[in-house]
Image: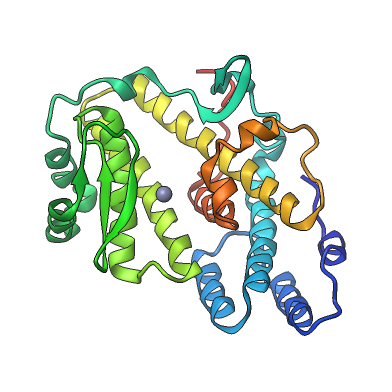
Length: 299
Ligand SMILES: [Zn+2]
């Protein structure tokens, strides 16, 4: 990915008030040290920008900040993992078309041998949140016929909607949504900054809580598959963050597109929620392991 400030500036017309202040923010961003991602700095800037400007502006400013951080953070692994030559055999296929959905390790569909909510509650990583989690679970909607997982608002509380069939998949799905609920209970859900925070916490909690369970059970092969799967999720998130940026700016960075236009539509958030690919990209960027060198091309 080649991206420089001049290219960025060229894509932004400067003849109205909003874009003049965008340029000011852009300059500030360029002047900050972008050698590593500073989560608090980005979150603070996200709330400030959200409170003081109109939509288009905060979106573009965040993109700018995101891309600078992305470039810097991924520099060491860029040549190996981030050439966007993502291996195509990691995706699910229908009628020969590659879908923006990752092939899942087999163990995801296997049973846990334990009640999933109890398993989550006793995990070390959430021990400080037990009363809150019990209340979230009590108010959630678990329906074994629907394999979708989402966080929904019940009154003013964030709760989980999903399948509780005691498979690894249900552990993964419920844990992810639980991360959203905990974050939104503490920081709200309305602002862009709280969305960034919420997705970040959901991803981190999902990866680490499931890792703990795999470790406890000495499932070393599955543990490797688990972390590899998460890194591929990250690459896909980066890919769509860049794709969305391309769409918004009419610029093109990705040389060879992985998915057809119709297949891209199956990434639901790419079509429905403008700006949300940044939220995913941001979360992935912040959890991407430092100095990650493992190859994703083999299982
Ligand atoms: Zn999420």
